[in-house]
Every structure is written in structure tokens, then in C-alpha cells.
Length: 116
Length: 115
Image (cartoon, rainbow over all chains, first blue to last red; front, side, top):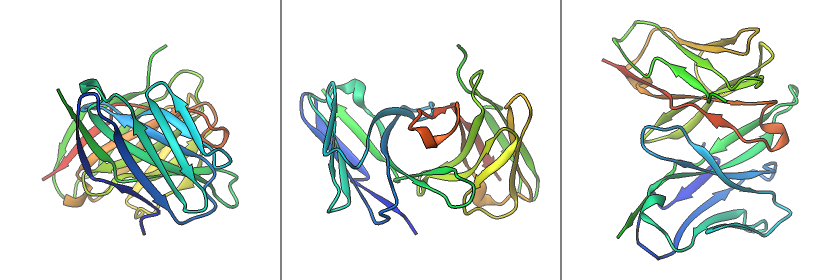
């Protein structure tokens, strides 16, 4: 069962445009929502993250919008650049019972291509 | 500060064999998590180790196992390899794990091909 659904699978945006990637979840136990960026041949790297008590978080050209009632969150990349071409993963964290540990569940990823 | 180091970078095995992958976390990090990345399924959580103890485990068969040493280095082992095990295996480290909103630092992964 896929707990975090991410769309679209791929996205082509012109330089200077806005890239939007969406994620949806069902489990209300999720309490932290990070986005990771992965370049070819590299591991994912944390880009930006949000907690559900905040509706929006902005860092430079990257913004997360969070809709708790709809259980959806999205990443907006303003003024997209060719250097932003990468695969983006949304994720959601929940606490596991017993061990007191937490687990990240990732979406399947969106391959973004920004064309000049 | 050196990043997360995974070895080997590439590995080719045949069905039925077993394989051991290694991960050296960032110095001082005590939590090591392993993920399997495939084009169809994205990143799937395998397990997490903290202070030499498996703290969390994903939904993978028992053929997938791991351990962590006293210096926080971790290994994962896959026995009786199947074609479907072909994937990029990623290791991520952090000071204490996902609980404190910490960044997970990922290595570049080990690309395993099973023929």
C-alpha cells in the first residue's frame, strides 16, 4: 500500500517557469513532511521540510504548501532553472509504536526537466 | 567532514548468490537507515539501526538483513538474490534518527545488478 502518492511522475518546465509537484497522504499519524532532491549518481538531499501546523514554508525559490484538511502538500519551484533538473521526492514521517522510533515514507518521485 | 560512504559503488551478482553492502556514516552519527530505490517503487525503507540495535524495519523479506558495529558503520546483507533485488541501495545517517526533524544524509548508493 502506497502511503504517499506523488504526482506527476515527470515534469518539463521552461526556464523561468514555476514547477509544481503534488503529494497526498492518508495516514493522519504523519507529523513531518520533507522534500528531497536527487541528482543523477547521487543520493537524495534534504531540500525543505514542513510541519502540519504550518500552511506554507518558503526557502528561496522553493515553497511548500500544506493543506492539512485535504491531506495534501506540494512543492513549488519559482523561476525554475536548468540546474533544478533532478528527481524530487516528497516524504512523510510517522512514529512507530514500541521502539519509539520514527520512519520516513517516500513518494515515488518526480523527474523534473527544466529546458532553456 | 566526510560524507556518508557506501561501498562498493557497483556490484553484479547472479541469482542465488548473497551480497554484503557497507556504509560508513558521517563521524558522530549514530543512526543508519537503509533504503532500496527502484524506478517503479521509488525509495522503500529497509531498516534503521541506532547504537548497534535494529530500531525499525520495513516490509522486506527475511533475506534482507543488516547490522551495525560499535563505530556506527553498518552492513546490509541480501541472501539468495533474486532478479527483483536489482536496485540502488542507499544508506542514510543522522545523529539520532528521524525523530528530531534532523536531516538524513544519504550516501551515493550501491547499484546492485542481479543477473
